[in-house]
Length: 201
Image 1: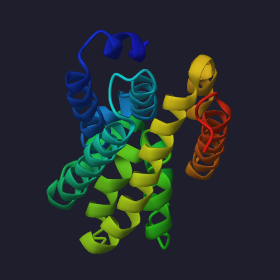
Image 2: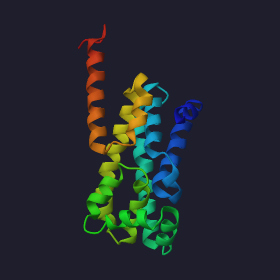
Image 3: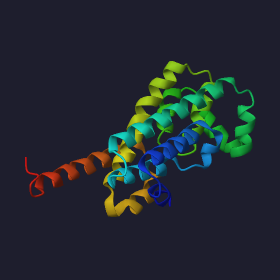
Image 4: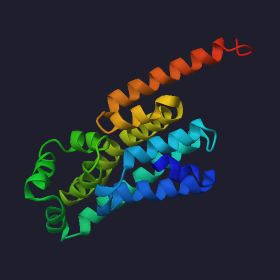
C-alpha cells in the first residue's frame, strides 16, 4: 500500500518521492503502469495526518503533474517513433481509440484525459504529435490538473477511517465527482470544527 511506503519517510522526502512519481506518470511512457491518482490520494492522507501541509501537498502534486504533461507534449512534437512505440505497448485498437478522440475534440480530450489513468499519460504526447498549439494545450490542461490534484489531496486528507473505501473507487470517478466530494468533505470538516468545544466562532 502506497500510504505505508510514504508514511515511513519524512514529509519533505515524501513530497519529493510523490513529485517524481507524478512526473513520470504524466510525462513518461512508463507512466501507463504507475498509480497517479492513488499517489495523490495517499499524499492527501499524509496531509490529514499532519506529515505535510495540505496546501503544500496540493501544490506539489499539481506542479509535478503539469511539468510531466508539458514534457510529454514536447516529446510528442519531436518524437517521430512515438506511434510505433505506443502501438507496441497498448495495441492498435486501444491506441486508435485514444488517437481518434483528438480529431475535432482536442480541447475536450486534453481536459478530460487528466481525470483518467493511462490516457493522462498518452494524450499530452498525442496532442504534441497532432500539432495542437502549446498555448491551447496548456489552457486546457493546467486548470483541470489543478482541480484534479486539489480534489484528490482534499479527499485523502479528510477521508479518515474511510480511506480504503475512497481509494477503491477513486479510479472510477471523473473530476466533477471528485470536486463535489471534496467540497462536501470540506463543508463537513468546517461544520465539525465549528461545533467542537472551544471552536465556536
